[in-house]
Image (cartoon, rainbow, N blue to C red; front, side, top):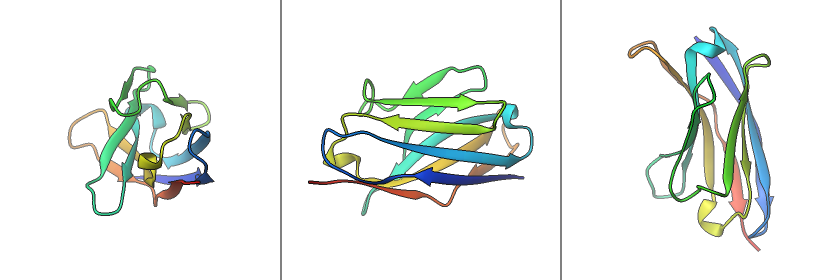
Length: 118
């Protein structure tokens, strides 16, 4: 079992920056690929970014060059730095942990709201 608790988020103007973080507890953190997903009203949940325990990252095309995902394996945390935010980035952002072995388990945080609006 893995418990994920997100923090950060909030309201920011277009062009601004915001960071969200996720603290994980439970099973060995390094066994999980960590990711951030988001879900806007009326839309499906989508992958924003992911990072392996070794630091390999993957980004959605819509956020490349603007968002940066990072993790601290010693502190069991993963963060998403969001720059040059756009109104279309408005969504609930969810932290995700996916075991490196298929069938090993996938876990979700409760979500944190990010709103980009003037």
